[in-house]
Length: 214
Image 1 (spheres, rainbow, N blue to C red):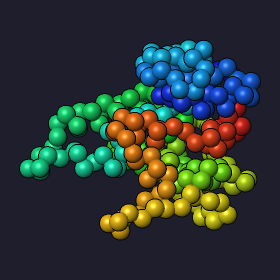
Image 2: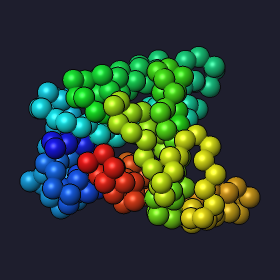
Image 3: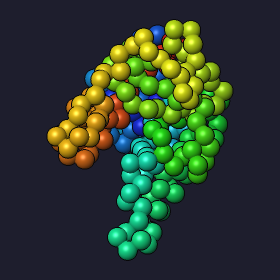
């Protein structure tokens, strides 16, 4: 199959599909960090949607879509931050352009955010620890003509109670706040660096996508 993985500089999903014999390409405006530039299209993914792909798996930037960024939507005087609102609208339009493209099978990945109310509720919500990665990161999937991702022969929907795997634990700060260990460990560095680290797909999820959708 021909697989396009959009907004993926890490090439985690691309490599997972390649290992299973598929013709997969990552596509991102950033250069790839996965070690296979021959499998990477460094460009705007919207320019490459009509390339005869069987599957499109997309990880659109969440900076204007996530719940944690909502605090920047309003100025100190209570008025709407027009620039931020326009960026959010453009981000939502970008997601829709990917999902409603001519590619028959599509997956959109993003954290919990504005997409659930401004567009539609996710098809499925998963955690990295469902698939063997010791981390907790609530991850939404919007699926078009693709099955739910399974682990241990069970689909994980909105409130799956998974107790037999390690979620990585938590870290409590001196102020009493509690964070997931993975989230805390990726909090260091500049904003752009954190964004890239946190956007990388966990190996277990990448493997599940390639095995089950490939």
